[in-house]
Image (tube, rainbow over the protein chains, first blue to last red):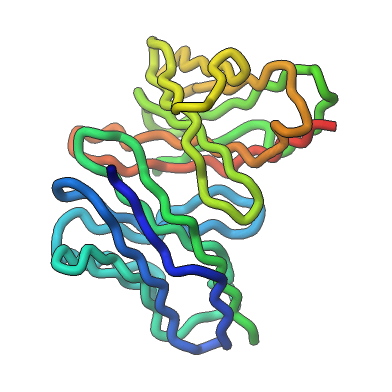
Length: 112
Length: 117
């Protein structure tokens, strides 16, 4: 079945550091891929998406590239801010199936 | 555009009572809405898919008689937790699917924190 795997554990880093959160997926066919962000006590917000291989999604300084050959969609940001502290979820949806499959999420803590 | 609201944002109820949570798409019509449950520091667990005008489709292990879902209009879906118990305490999040024919994006509500005492 379709599934998403995110790297284990929270991520703690200093302001202006480079952020990478790994995401790999297993799916039949060609899913659409998403990164969602959840701030404390809130629902999920779509951060960026990519719908086909080699697409790059970008928003608010974050980027992720749909890599079919490595079945990955790693999230990156060149210089994080304290306001980027949140939980980040990688997700996919497969055509013909409405369901979003989520990774476990990564808590990102940015310290001043 | 594509805003989804939930009401209430927080609710505390006594064990044995029922609680209704509303999910509304504010600026678009959503034929399909989803209900998720999120435990602390965990990912979202899909509970059910709600289709306007028809019965909801529940995921395996979710009690349909306990979690009643009604999608009576294209902008409103409700989740009723019946005879709530402390183990039902959780963060409930709804989402609505983008109505476009080729889009599978979902827009999420802000969530409802349910505490059962």
